[in-house]
Image 1: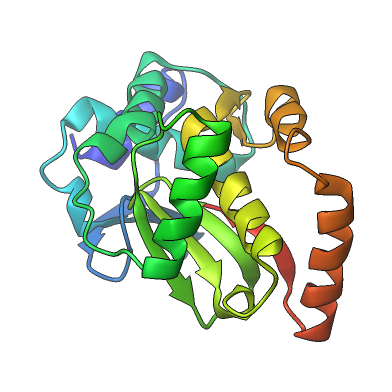
Image 2: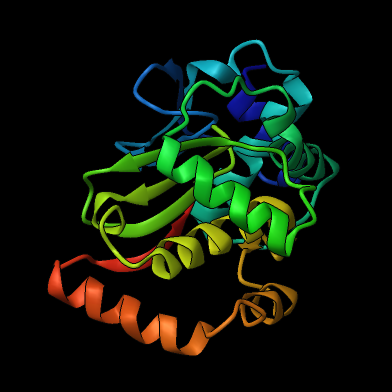
Length: 219
């Protein structure tokens, strides 16, 4: 039985699987990303190449999560726990090869002041993208900040860095087949940044001025 059919049968043991399947490991994705689509009575699942050697039970958890989103169902399985725990801890094994000097200085300032130097340094890079000011990618352990922060006041850069470091520390809470990134604890910690309310006003001005779609994004 292929992985898609096996994932489906474990989720819906009383349902007959009548669709065709296609599973592909692709170089088009970064980190441990994946997607799913249904067309012409076929389910196609595309996983990044990094998934190929990973334990089958963890892959099944990922595919089950994708199937539940596709069919708009809510279920919980042990395999999905395996998958979520894998994503939360994959940063340990990811090589740290990217580090902008400016971002490294920001990371070290924030790590020292707010986290007692307990956060492991991730990959750090700037991007030309106008989709967001900052993001943290769990699958590549990368904090990415917009180039528009390079010449912004230091407190704006540091606040966005702080936000992404909170994502790295707290990861996400999984419930009802959804990942919750901005939890109550996360929001409480976010407000602990000095002058956070005023900084968010300034960030909104920066976003508007440069036609950036949003301030933050997580993967």
